Image 1 (cartoon, rainbow over the protein chains, first blue to last red):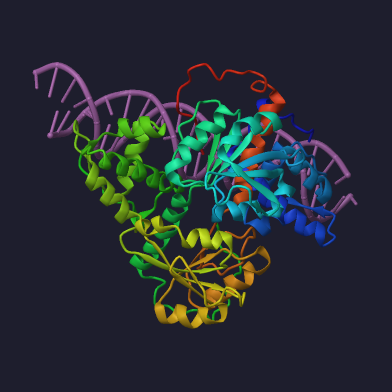
Image 2: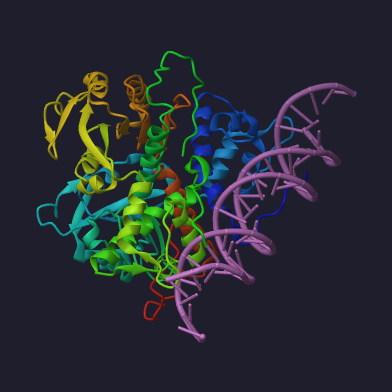
Length: 237
Length: 237
DNA sequence: TAGATTGTTAATCGATTAACAATC
DNA sequence: TAGATTGTTAATCGATTAACAATC
């Protein structure tokens, strides 16, 4: 039971990477309740995963547990945060100060997860010069200079689909390395740029397919089983 | 090369389901350009996928192509839309008329993808009675009655995390079958309810991990290769 | 100690990719 | 016809799960 050394290059399956924030979320809850140790079977019960999978995932972070006692909650939280890079804050510029942009600007909780949006940009003269959730709305033209000066590496696009590509182009010229894209377009970017698309239409596909499947089979439609006691945990995506 | 019959129950891998909207997006672009036929190698080149994978995915929709000529663009679009249930509109109630809710309410494009948000609900007296993008903002208390009367099966939660669970509970009591959850909490729901979480923190995990990895290895940091011509297609998520 | 839980190797499962016959 | 592309079976790959020794 010696601790295994890290995978080279820190490779980790996407699926594991997606689960880590969920563990983190639950662990923070546990910590708030004053729980100090946790086993993978407990985590697994909460998140509907088999314990060994949780263990595998946690091993990517490099943490070691102790047989019989499990893991230290505090240490585990710390380890996940540091593995995910949530300790050193990424500063980001956001382009598109519409409703979605405003919602993200107001999301104080992001700072706990390594993200600080430091300014917003727009081309709408009515918005430029205003402040949204204590962040200045600046003219888009200022982005390149400021990004360079402030060493910003992360861009968030909440602009309309039609202008998303040109926004991305400017971001990349300005030295931005990663883009969180909320516009419903696939951006064309150089290889070295990392793009994460927040793809609402894929979500919609899952949802509508599920609903369609449900009503086509008709199994669930008319049955009114609201009164039955049911397990309070469903498969979520 | 006889057309294979559908998988029983219409089973389809999640990954394929996620790719279908991307094919759809590209196909609509092609159609707009007046292209009438398409091969899987063309689609694959555009989306960075091998042709056989595209073919596999498309087969889940039941479409058949023709050797040498490929697929009819129009027919393929239609088939994907009907497979995903985008032809018969799902009407939805949205709870939480904040910035994010407002953004979704204003997203006209959803209607093309089988989603119509018919009303918003909130508990804030200042918002109740107003209209957002032509949709009424109603008191949350009215939701159960209206959902029943209008036969609404889909709920969208854009309310704050603290109240998301109680909103979900009410939705479920009201007969809602599927929930699109934008609040950063895992909802506890009965088995029969389908929940799709729009999990921004997972996204953030990918992003910050990627950025951290980049700067730790240091490979890309100082190199200023902006001038180099590079392939205009990166791996996106 | 006995029992619970970790770390790790091996088996299983499912999705992706390769190979190739069918066919337009 | 020859060449391109589909549909399909088989091989590969990667992630999940099972099994189990180590150990607190």
